[in-house]
Image (cartoon, rainbow, N blue to C red; front, side):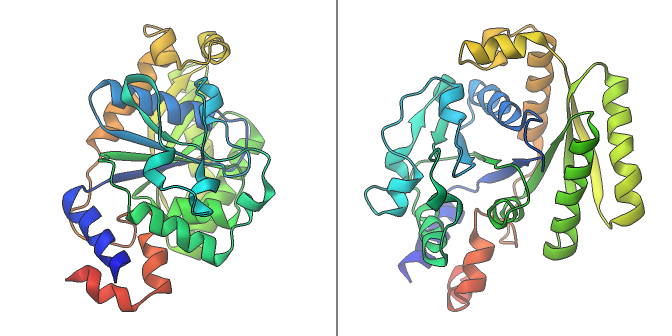
Amino acid sequence: MDQASGLRRMRQNNRVKVVAVTGGKGGVGKSNVTLNVAVAMAAQGKRVLVLDADLGLANIDVMLGLRVRRNLSHVLSGECTLDEVIVEGPHGLMIIPATSGTQSMVELSAAEHAGLIRAFSELKTPVDVLLVDTAAGISDMVMSFARAAQDIMVVVCDEPTSITDAYALMKLLTREYGVFRFKVVANMVRSLREGQELFSKLTRVTDRFLDASLELVACIPYDNNVRQAVRKQKVIVDAFPKSPAALAFRALANKVASWPTPNQPGGHLEFFIETLLQKQPVMQEEIRE
């Protein structure tokens, strides 16, 4: 019952807004979107935590030039707590790094999955917003991270494979897991009109075949400064704060901050709680007390 008590305290003391950033296809700029939104929110004084959920090919810490001594693998092995692996980024941004080049982290067992759940339930660091940067593809782990979030941001770019993979991701989440609301970020577009047309291409398919609601929340312009910022191991909102992409990322960060945080327990309220309750139904009554 200690675990249930920890979940109860997490909800009572600090309701966390959980947003998964995903996209299906790799190379659409998903991690860049995650980091820029996170840094922009942290600069506004929000307590923001980023989880690098690409457990086998982590890169969030590399993108910021951070030195990491411990990561999620050390939490799962019992060497340290989740709080102890958190590293600090720009403006006090908090980051939970994963591993890179480790196959075992991609194929977590049920026991290791439960261990990760326990780690989040016992997190003592105060957090307002948790941004989850998922891996590419539609693996079970990506599905778990996405369906545990309150909001899912699907990053797409104007490429046929990006649209196809984003549709496949939403199709699986809708038909297999009962997730029906998605927020779309059109990334690396040449104009606002191009972003809107990209969104229209996606909705033409989803409206026909899926019972899903899509909302276009941002059109991030193609900006050469993004690549320059990556080379500097900085985010564009800091490296080139007046650039078109930086302004768009800040506007998106403001939107994310305005999305409501649920006050009542629900299927997607906190990270992994839905999975936890399914596996341990005895705890359900404890958490509702």
